[in-house]
Image 1 (cartoon, rainbow, N blue to C red):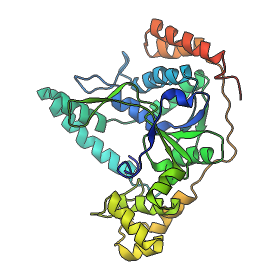
Image 2 (image 1 turned 90 degrees about the vertical axis):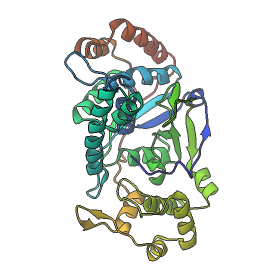
Image 3 (image 1 turned 180 degrees about the vertical axis):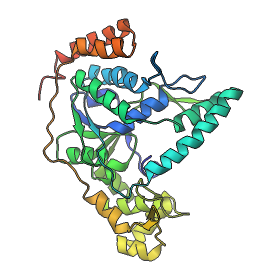
Image 4 (image 1 turned 90 degrees about the horizontal axis):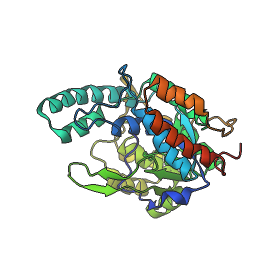
Amino acid sequence: MGVQLGNLIKGREIEREALTGRVVSVDAYNWLYQFVTIIRDRTTGEPLTDERGRVTSHLSGIFYRTSKLIGSGIKTVWVFDGRPPEFKRVVRERAEARAEAEERLKKAVEIGDLEEIRVASQQAATVTEEMIDQAKTLLRLMGIPVIQAPSEGEAQCAHMCRTGMVYSTASQDFDSLLFGSSRLVRNLSITGRKKMPGKNEYVRVRPELIELEGALASLGVTREQLIILSMLVGTDYNPGIKGIGPKRALKIVKEAGTLEGVLRAVDWDSQFEGEPVPAETIFSFFMNPPVDDSVTISFGKPDREGILKFLVDDFGFSEERVNRVLDEICSASQTSLLSFG
């Protein structure tokens, strides 16, 4: 879900080729969730599956969309979530929202409401541990580094970006900025056009680059104040303060200045399973999340036979199409993409 800062923070559109030769750390769960959400049957809202009924949308997204990035000379490092903080609320809320969306999806399919099928199917999407394991297997077969974060993947991505291991974090969410990522690229995993919510209109989607220093300067706040602002709006760790949106939160933070000042100005009420969660606890987690300083990045060559066995033999992908994409990946790997590490 992530913090909703789209009304405050705007990046600049770039062409995908502007990232050629760059290494970006991918918020793995965010991208997998996108693939499962978007790559679906339009009439039923169901994700792609193999003949055994196993979901394959995530594998399709990884293989075909990541291959396009490889063709553009963009190196990706996939970072997976570890153990979330005990006070993380979004897991429970997502489960409740998915159950409600599944009911709406059933009704929409019965009456043939394509727009509601699209919306409800996205909200009902889920990424399982089995799907995550499958994703890691495919990425490793493709020669793409897989990193296991000790806690939040976006925090690890941000740490890698801030320390110069990668050029940018790649995610749709803004949370990596709160964790201190110096750059964030959005829309990198999306191709072509995107349907506008509630409208029969489509817009071309381009990657969007957000630089933390510039975003803070445009808002006139520090990173610490951006975190406090986000806590007022709502994060994965707290529901936000009722009646406070991004613009009002910005005003409050600028006037109060510090977390202590903001807490004197608002009625903080955040709980986890009935127990209060101090604002200081959430703020401290954003400022100093668990990260792994010892990770290394090492790219490998695509394992053609392994990929064919995994995608074609195990999951029923088209052999002709997979081979065609493999030709492109292997060609790219012989130039400069996988030549280091």
